[in-house]
Length: 329
Image 1 (cartoon, rainbow, N blue to C red):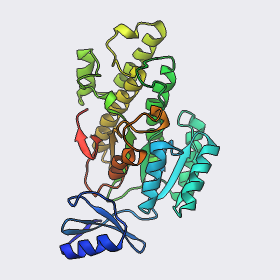
Image 2: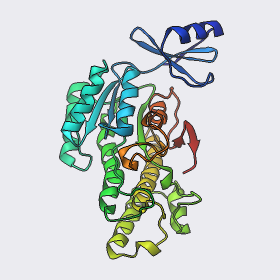
Image 3: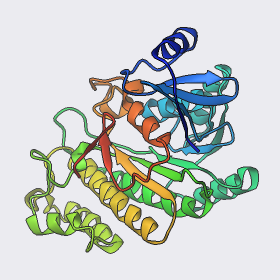
Image 4: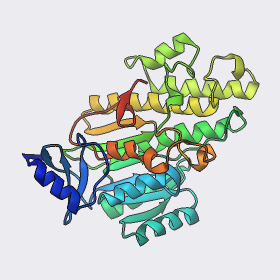
């Protein structure tokens, strides 16, 4: 539960000098540690947070880049982080680095496209922690750099980015712990997958309207959309079918992630679950996925994801964010 109480500006200043805090604006919160309890100091308010070291968070693709940085920041905040990666050696090395920094991070191998691997993780979480509180779907691939727009690996891109995310959500929902603050799912997505982006959107107006109408949106429609794209890639007709023109396969995969996020938020809410699911765009980040050609750091790219994971007890769900602000799908 959140607890609010007025505190003086002098006390805020004193806490800021004595304790490490996030360097963010005075209108936002600053992270401070009071023994084993987490709190934030906001302008004129003192807030006790809902999480603790018993809060379990799973991060997919956590061995490098944005996933590694999300894992690090959440562990610094005092949560127990389960860092997952397809490559066990890479995942164990990333975990070792974080553990040497005194952080509570554990590793479990995970291939989001392997049902047996997902099942093993689920059973391990249930046996050791009784489930999880937060899921960050970060695992993803992109094979285009610069001005490239090849669809040679479109099947792998769509399967990993969309179906992998979908697999994890379906497997983890039954394991998410009931909480007054609500469990959370954060999907790392991209503005390239926006339905109504001005420069990189679906040219098929009818399909755009169908995917944008939450009342008619369905899993079948999303799956059919990506299946149609992959079929057109296979038969060579995709270039004239009105798909996004920049990083087409990646954009289609993230368009599907965004649509699935909106749909699952509605379904979970309709079913009475306190599971809040949102997606966010980290920006053009200097990671292996961009060939290190991005314009922001992995630390900056992780920020909004961490912010969503630790958001106070408010029922924000089915939204798309960037730089801690809601943006349009």
